[in-house]
Length: 451
Image 1 (cartoon, rainbow, N blue to C red):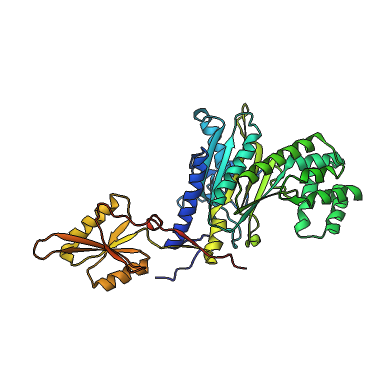
Image 2: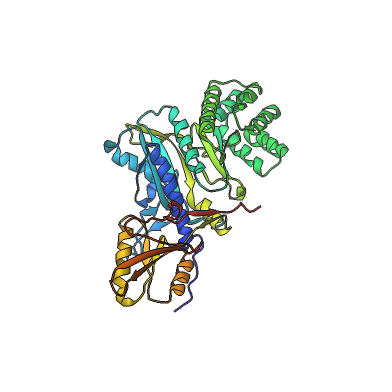
């Protein structure tokens, strides 16, 4: 048999790592449900024409085609590269059966044929939460959706995350108030501040966008405003630019920052960062990027915003607001660095020891009684000295070993359970005994973020 080589960009987790991923997905799902969001799952394929951007097929799309297809057959299906495109189609297709505003969350894999690197994979899992309206969607939903994701990530045992907010109306209104016509190109140039010095960006604004040096300086001053509260409003006002759209953007951004700060605990930071643009031709109001402390090299681990035309059938438009969390993008590097690990690779909290093969039925009966009360367990694979069976449990991370003994004269059974970590062994009844809550299922172990 030929040697098996891993496929780059398609991460596979070991059982204990997968337990971490499952706990994270379960946690964010529970939080979304606490806020009244319904779960959906969409198909993994969409027509190529729907996946295409602006009529042009993205080279990163994986196409789906039968091996037995005719040689000249054209592929018309592709794997979805995010969860927004299939969600937009889902809303259009099922609008007659949905209640609006429709509140949904979705946790699914997506596929993207890009160059694999840390945090960027060809197969990855995302968690999205959105609210979609019919023809209109009041602004307060922006605050709600962003607050929901702040709550969800604040409950996770990952390094501290920072939600950095801006508002497209604020940016566009400011540039319009300055007298800049090509707002999109101005945003593209400002986005180069991460790579170029300010004077170089100012020169590009003059050359490419046609701004005056004074206008360029105002653009730079706006982009460098970054505060953890609503003091940005006064700072923007002090730049001396006035515009009705700018006023609306300032008001909306202040409401989002205040709303998210109200639910953010110690594990989540909230900032207004007026350099954030995101989705030049897509987002229309609130925008957000999410970053993780100690892992800034990954860039954002989540993001989203307000889109006033998620989907349209020509008669009805469906505006929405949503935010996505990159489950794989966040967890795979944390698992690789040992920041997160699973407490055990198996769900079993108890190993029921086996005296002899003839007594397997007695051990199986104990296991059945424990499972009836939702205690995960397994029977030892073969009879052996108890010390060997205990070591078997240790290797699997199973915290408890159950012993069944039958009195030679009366035939009555006695039961004892041993915590193999402390060595404590006590009498137990399979109909009533339960492990501590913390041992019921695998948990997530955390270490300090590497410096």
